[in-house]
Length: 219
Image (tube, rainbow, N blue to C red; front, side, top):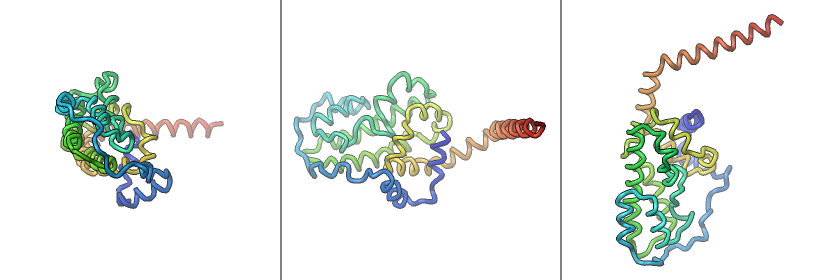
């Protein structure tokens, strides 16, 4: 989680400044500029699909794609901060605490319920879908208790996220920062409660360095 904490410590940058900086580095702006401004649906709405959205079922993303076919210019189920299929795999989900597992389910349902309202529209813009869903991630994470499960589930979250991929997406970096700002109190409380462990770790590191210095000094 060190890279994530380092990333979250960049609050000195405004979101706009960080966006501009990372965009220049990664060149990710304008990937979907060729997408049509508005789309008509390819098929009618399906009650079974809407039922999946109510349950937070990841296959609802496929229903949405069948109806509007936005692809990566919309909001894919493999989105960096909430990769629906990956987070629901037993391999990853089982590594969360019970409270952490509830967060995964609640956040997923929060996203699909909002996406259902877009699914029902008679016309839409994939760019608007992308923007609104990305903004919704932050809201759904916070309302689903992300801050309360963050520290105890940091290793489980770390196993899910592809940090290199996240760092290449300035929009996602901005979302991580925004979410983390809401969790500062919980992070501070956890750090205070684990101060003894942190001190012991630092002491062991210092002791090891001293032994190395002494060993080389005797040669």
